[in-house]
Length: 151
Image (cartoon, rainbow, N blue to C red; front, side, top):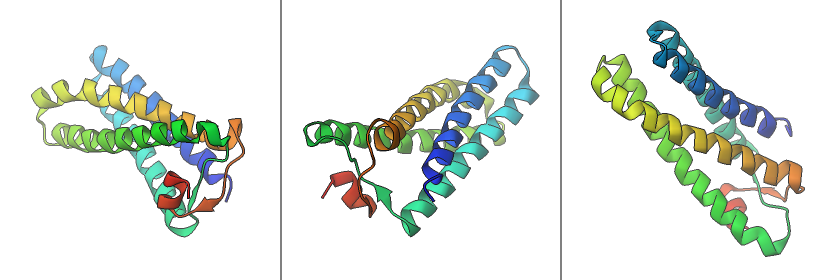
């Protein structure tokens, strides 16, 4: 199951790339392509969430395995990422809901903000993956609270 973090990170990166492509479509006035691409981005993010939650429930989360002197900085960064991802998810749901209900005036206002939040969420998510599995060897896999707080 060590491949799951890599797959979920790829899904988040894919969702951000699709959001960027969707943004480009709407700038060019290609509304139908925009809609299809943004739905694909949402599905990619949803697949990430399913894998992440399943892994968290059934396996646990990997704690930071890097040096103790930077663990506090990683933890602060991780908390920032978690808050950003929750904010991005809420904005994403609201933005999609506005579009599907045909409220394009509000959708056009909130969409760019949602996209920017999602780009930062994806970037920080990829960085979390790099810190946990590439730059440093991952720590123990344990419950989410223990992994975040490091005890």
